[in-house]
Amino acid sequence: MTTTPSSTPVGPVHGPLLPQPGEPGWTLWPRRIWPVNPLAGAPAAVVLAAVVAGVAGTLIWRISVASIGYPIVGVLVFAAVYGTSRRAPRGAEPIGIAVTLALLTVPAVLAAGWVSVVCVMAAWVVGWCTFVGGSSWAAVLLGPWLPWVLGVRVGGWVQRGGRQIELSGGRTDLRRVVIVAGATVGLLAVFGLLFADADVAFAHLLRGVAPRLDGDEIIMRSVVFAIVAMFVLSGAYLLRFPPRLDALRVRRAWSVARWEWAVPLAALDVLFAAFLAVQASVLFGGHRHVLETAGLTYADYARQGFWQLLMVSALTLLVIAATLTVAQRATVADRRLIRLLIGTLCALSVVIVISAAHRMWLYQQAYGFTDLRLMVITVEFWLGAVFLLILGAGIPMSGRWLPRSVMIAGALALLGLAMINPDRFIAEHNIKRYQQNGRLDTVYLGQLSADALPALDALDAPLRDCLRGKIGAVAPQPWYQYNIARARAAAEAIPATDATDCAAPTEHITR
Image (cartoon, rainbow, N blue to C red; front, side, top):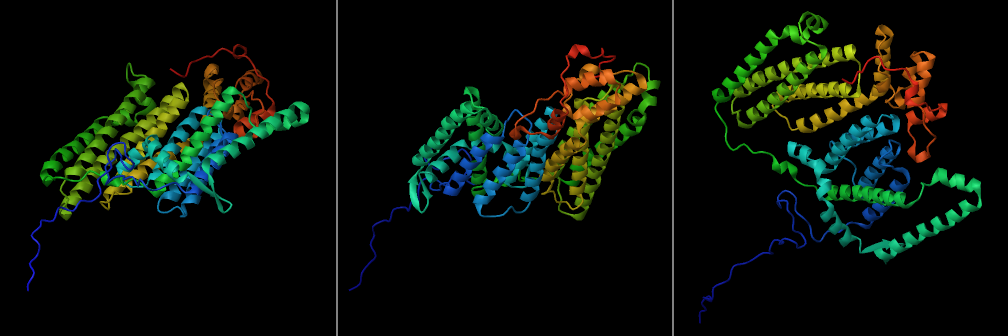
């Protein structure tokens, strides 16, 4: 007897449905870019490291004070993130860590607030790009923004992993850990305050070791704890579940023939060369060109060059990006022509960068040095480095390293600015001008930070003492707010002076 196969139709086989909005595992990001693992939970070591780093941050870090708190918190975050990830930094990560910590060290060394702000902002960019990884422009541009959208992911990750924390071989509920920690802090606070009221010496010791506690301070310390803990949790999450931002790289959908891109690019090169040839006297004329041209001032001279730089920079970068996106590179001749035309464009742009920096330097020699003008020169040098990097990327026709190199070049430019000690540099050069022409903006000089104190020794006693009292009268600060420049000023015990005590300014260099 033979059997025949059943004629009953077999239904389609279905896999698990994708998470719907609001369900665990759902995300706004495309799943190919950054999927969510709805079952993963934060390891106990990560949660505890975040708590420890957060508590340490509340003791040593004041966001509004340039101090050793910044580099110490940076070290704590990197140590907690990589220490709990069970892997050493790899690839370009050691460079990113070193540059980030170097930028965070600036607030501990210099008292100039504006330098600390830009260095901390750069440290944010480099640090988060280190955690995110990737080598594309998408990774560099989007990486620093990811911490702002990580809250939901990290919150769910910690909630799933933090319900039970293993302590001393057993399993303890996280709420009990929080209760014990709160009780410990409360007992120390109550008895510490009682002992401080009972003994003046102990109160002095307590004020030097522990931060001041009042209503506003408690709120700020709570915010600092949350920020530092979130840094650790977000960094640990990114190392375990990195987004594939390189997958957002623009793919070449089509290409154009050689003559279609070579003709406009060659014409642009000729135009740039003609412009430089005609404007040679403007670009390199210096003092003579300003003096010999009727109606031309140093302000117009420098401003003209700066806007030329911005226009040339934007045009060059856009043209290069468009050319590399659509240009056909199938043959050796194609690649050779790309190198020639783009290399020429970059070289001409570098010439204008050098000229603009030189022009701004002449402007400062004539009208005085300020923080904004030094920052402009720093940006100009960074743009010049970008053109050189593009030129270098065109030689091997491989630019995977270019986006991160541009970012690191910007960070190194800021570190170079910090190394010259800008406020001291400004004071020294403005005082040299004063010794030559008798003009000095005492109002602006009195607004510099304690970094400028050594430069004031070149002034005569009355003016020197007055300015020292304006910028160097620094009260002793607790150890967790230590800053090298402020500590040196505090050690001199300089008496404060009123702004009206100094000599009237003989010029205003901030115009």
